[in-house]
Image (cartoon, rainbow, N blue to C red; front, top):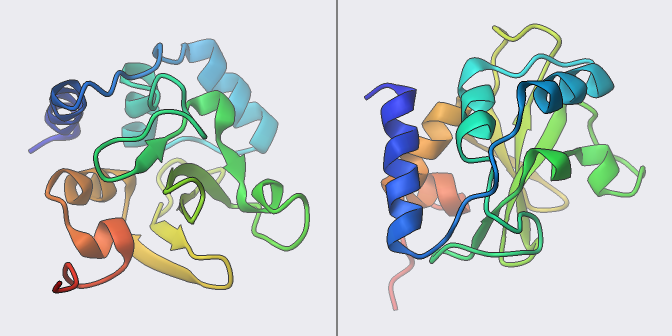
Length: 158
């Protein structure tokens, strides 16, 4: 499945949950983000922001059925910014959170759009890599893969 198909599937999944997406980001907004941070967005992440751009309210707004809140482009920040300038990497960018910032999903971005872009869960004191790319993250999200969503192999038994 190509990324455009994944985006269409993501949009349908959100529609079924009555979880509206934000107004798509413009090319000017994408370029301003890249210029501000000195990074190039990989094609999958760029396409995501140009198509869905997170939940309608973004960060600290609407959550999906799994309590995941996808942020709008204008809310994406570096790990360092998310930590109020204290400790944190400038190449990791928060794009979503679970349960009102209990954990943050962050993607590694670089000045080269073709560089690897792994996705991590930031648990605070530790990072856990959960996907090799934004595409792989979205694929795992759509499959409700607990490793991708929560950093655990399977849903804990009751």
